[in-house]
Length: 138
Image (cartoon, rainbow, N blue to C red; front, top):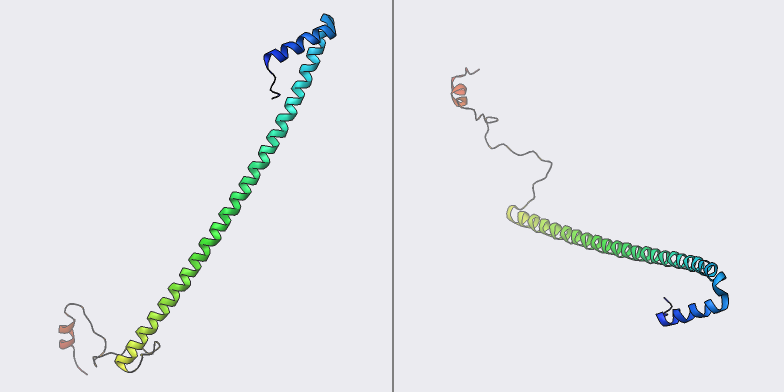
């Protein structure tokens, strides 16, 4: 942390022994150790808070990037849908024109289909034709 080597620590210990003496040195060492622990705890607290903030910023940035990607994908899908709708409408117009050219008119969607046989609805059951022949006529 402070880039202090063993020889430098040894010199500090010898000076402390000479200045404080053997009676007060253990008490001073405990006091120094207590303050070093507090300083380290404070440093780790600041460091972890800083890392949390960086992680939060990274998450926010990631969230913004994902939202932008989702918006872009939505635009692409919307544009593709509009293009598809235009293509379908163009094809439907071409089909209408082809039917109009072939028949001369367009059948109205509200008109019921015409029945080509004059005697009513067909009965496709087996034996239905025999029943019709054998039925009494009025």
